[in-house]
Length: 150
Figure 1 (cartoon, one colour):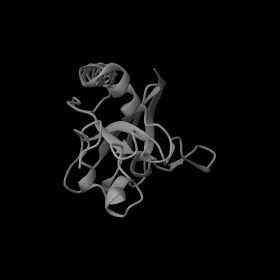
Figure 2 (cartoon, one colour; figure 1 turned 30 degrees about the vertical axis):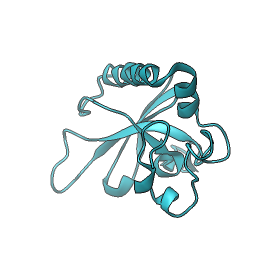
Figure 3 (cartoon, helix red, strand yellow; figure 1 turned 90 degrees about the vertical axis):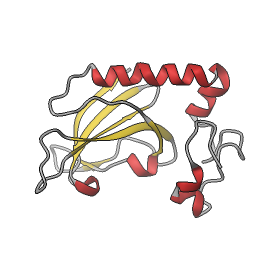
């Protein structure tokens, strides 16, 4: 089964565990409220969604973040997988996303990574913001590099 956005639901642990009912089965509401990606596609069509993704990819690439390779695609991701906990300067831990929302994102290996110290950039977006973070393997020790309203 595929989602309205083209995500392969059958490969997702949430769908396999029955925590997600799939957006085609729920008319774009797999987690209880309307998914912004499904709504965007329903209103503007798939071609409009593809153009919007290209625009956001360009926005990320134009940030010119040192060590971040060019982004070529963004994938629909559930908030549960990308809502990382960040340590703030005062020592507190904070999350900035919603576990039950969809985002577009990707993971890009940092150009300065080596075999002993793998580092990655995570990019996450919706219609309102761009977020770039850097982290180690398995999303360890995440640090926010940039948060920008769109």
